[in-house]
Image 1 (cartoon, rainbow, N blue to C red):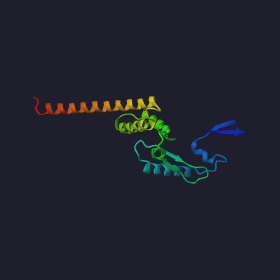
Image 2 (cartoon, rainbow, N blue to C red; image 1 turned 30 degrees about the horizontal axis):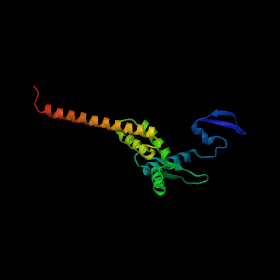
Image 3 (tube, helix red, strand yellow; image 1 turned 45 degrees about the horizontal axis):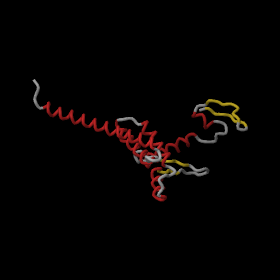
Length: 172
């Protein structure tokens, strides 16, 4: 990273330093190993508790607090909608867009189920009336995935049928 030197809000220079040198930087005042330990503890907690497929979570540290809060944004969206009977909620659009972006980065294979879940979450949160373009594209991609899965299943069934039909005759 580059460390910028500011005087009165104006950059007066910068210096490129190695990340592992930052704790030793004059005035830094933090223990690099403690940062790594805290990061490891946080990732371990998130891995153990944030397990909903396609889940969207918000990690918040308030100023001067010595703890973090983790919010399940899908649960917050559902709770807000249930309490207010509102079609819109403050988290829905952001979570939908994040789900969309994550789905676009997910490629076939075992990740297909994750991609499907992300696209479904996106479509559920957006609604056709408020965001027709993204909603329809998400549904189009879901349909393409279903069509590809059906074609693959039909191809596999045909291959199995061919094996059964041609495998018992004993070739000479």
